[in-house]
Image 1: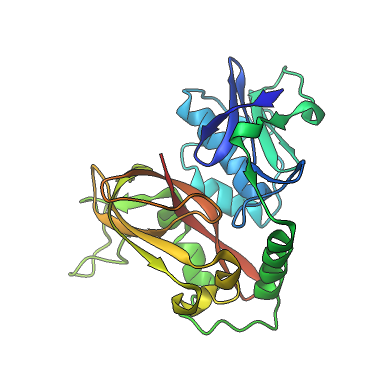
Image 2: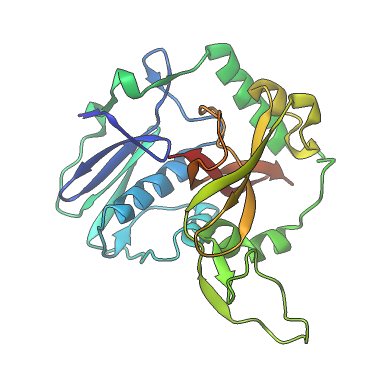
Amino acid sequence: MNLADIEAGVAVHHASNGVIVASRFHMGEARVHAPDADDLTMAIDALEAWHRQGHSGSVSIELSEEERPILTASLPWLTLDEAGSHVVHRFDHGAAVLGRSASFDASGIMVNSDARILVDSEKHTSMQEAWALELSEQNVSQGAYVSDQVHVLGLEARLGMQAQAGPMWPPRGSNADGSLPHEGEAIPLVARVVSWTRLIAAGCPSEFSIRAPVLGGLTSLLVTFDHGPSGVFLHADGHHADVDIDDEVRLVVRRVYAQDGTLRYGRKALLL
């Protein structure tokens, strides 16, 4: 099967019983992940594409202990069930969400040449080494420290875009009088660019100092939502990042940085 369409940064094929997505990044003929993507973000990409297409029902997916809280926080609408009506098939640099009775052969999945993003082998290797160094226990971030407890508490807001009544996003811990705020609706995943900044490698925050030289810098966007506040997001790594004011972007889940040997995920922006 040849995946020719592009949605939210990945190659996609929609079928009546589900969806198949795969990474657009290729090193020669070999499919690889985007610089900030991995098997977990591919599974989330597949489920979001499935949901956008109007599919519904319970879903079965094999997840590690580390992956489960990230996926469930990212997809608050998702119902997980080992006997679900749909199954997530995870394969190298891709994922499919199909009806339980559907057969699936990952060996036949290819990405159309026009949809591919070619990757230099040395740059790809350098990025893998940079992530490994950032994840190592010997690495001590010089940026703002976020404890695991605070990080976990903010997952639903950061990944699921869950807001407080108002709407207010990111949520606050309490109201001015000390009372607990009411939960609001999730902020939409499509936004409009208000302004943007291109950061050269030497000027990037220290959390990204290991990978920024490989990427050649980072692009930061201030975006506004149709319903809700504004927010600042990084542009997804490896994709065309020439943005203009009023461009529409979609927020996708990607790796952001690593701290204390743990990957920290968040939403990043991609041009629609």
